[in-house]
Length: 208
Image (tube, rainbow, N blue to C red):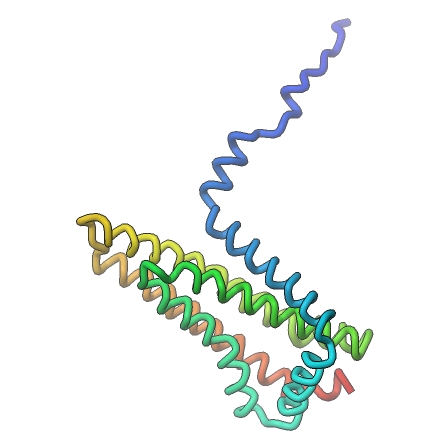
């Protein structure tokens, strides 16, 4: 009977493979880190300025609960589309990178502050409200925002490279970027419409 030997190399982490994957997805990793940092900043902001933030969020929710679908759609579509439009516009600038990174950070901070407010002031009802009416649409919205920001970083890098080289982006490639941004904005608007409908119909029932 042969003795079994244990080769520790078989259990070692594939560092080179991890480095390759990290390099391949470096933009998405950066964007996720920025978004996560924004979420922590939002929770910290709420804990330090609870009264001021609570008053602002409470007033905004009261307006939405007392409004119809069309007015709520204006509010939610503004919240969902403005970051996407800023990202798309900044993508065509060589100096757009910091503004592209700022969008997921600020949106993460706002989302975290709202959820913190709901849980701290309404307890289980606030958690249920967040779970049913906020998080499903927020997940899709932030997925679109991360995809759009990733596209924006790529395009911004290309524009920055063209400034210092003779290479110019072809019309076909730019058309592809524009088409993806249009799809991202369309999906974000659909998410905003669903959020407005749910808050108009079920918001006050779930929270009060």
